[in-house]
Amino acid sequence: MGVPERMVRRLDVTGPDGVRLAAWEFSDMPKCGPEAGPADGAQETGPLTRSKGVLLLHGLMGRASHWADTARWLSGRYRAVGLDQRGHGRSAKPAGGGPGDDGEHQDPYAREKFVADAESAIEQLGLAPVALIGHSMGALTAWQLAAKRPDLVHALIICDMKASALGEQSQREWEEWFKSWPVPFATLADVRRWFGEDDPSLERPTPSRGDFFAEVMTERDDGWWPVFSRRQMLGVREAWVHDAHWDELARVVCPTLVVRGIEGELGRAEAQEMVRVLPRGIYAEVPDAGHLMHLDQPADWRRVVEPFLQAVLPADG
Image 1 (cartoon, rainbow, N blue to C red):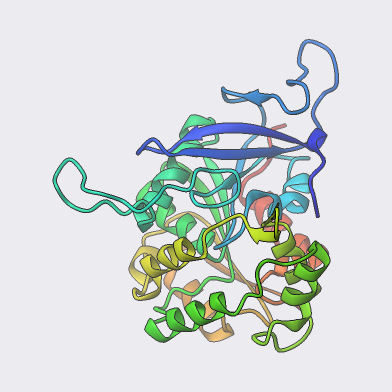
Image 2 (image 1 turned 60 degrees about the vertical axis):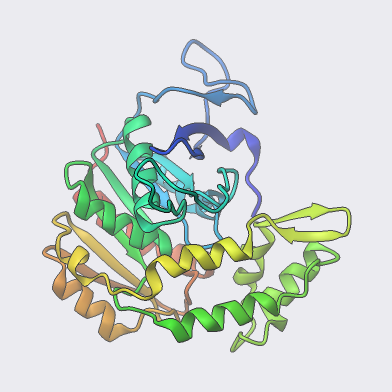
C-alpha cells in the first residue's frame, strides 16, 4: 500500500498555532515542459492552479497515504489532497500543552486544533470551495469545519463516524487495547498478522486492517514501532468521546453523504438519524465492508462516492 514518490507531491501547511503539517497531493505529475512540477522529493510551497479541490482527512492513527487509492481516481477530475493531521504521519507531533497567553492550559490536541488545521490547509492551498471526505475522526473534523465555515465547504462525505457520545467505558477499552500491542514487532509481516489476524479484539481476520497498521509503523534498532504516540492518541480521542456532536451536524448546510460499512462501527439506525438531522443528508452503505470500508472494498466505495461528487461538485470543464 506504499505510495510511489512519483505519484505524490508534498505541500507544507502551517496550523494557526504554528504546528507544521504535511499535506500530500496524489496525482500523475507532468514529467517535462514549462508546466512540469518539481522533481521527485521536492516540495511545493504555494497553491497549484488546478480543478476543484477535495481534501481527505484520515482517522485516528491514520495518515494521508491511507487515501492513496481514493485520491488517485479522484485526481482525474479534482485536485485531491490528503492531510496528515497533527500527531500523525509526517506532521508535527506537539508535546503536551502549557499555559497560553491568557494563563490557561493549552491542549495541542483539542478538537478545535484539528478543525483549525483543516481550515488552514484549505485556505493556504487554495482548495475552496472544497469537498471534504473524512473517515472516523477525520469525518468529525470535516463536519465540525463544515458547520463552522460553510463558505469553504461545498460538499461533505462522512465515513463511518458516530454523532453520539462513545463514553468513558470506550476510552478505557482503548487504553487496555493499546497496552496489549506486542511492540516492538520483529517484521512488517508480524505487524500485518497481529492487526489483521491475531489481535483478540478482532471478530474475524481482516487483511486491510493489517495493511493499515503496516503503513503507520517505523523501524528502529529493536524492531517496528508506531509512528505515533499511543499516549497522545488516547489524548486525541479523549477530546471527543465524551460528547455528542448532533448540534454541529445539524448546522452543516452543504450536501452530505453519510456512508457506513455494513460491518463497521456506525449502525444503520444512527446513520439514518444522522441523515435526518442533516439539512441535505444522503445515506449510503458499502456491502461486505467494515470500519475501513475504503480499504476493505475500494471498488464498492468508489461506486458510492463518485456519483455523489459528480452530482454536487462537477469538475471544471
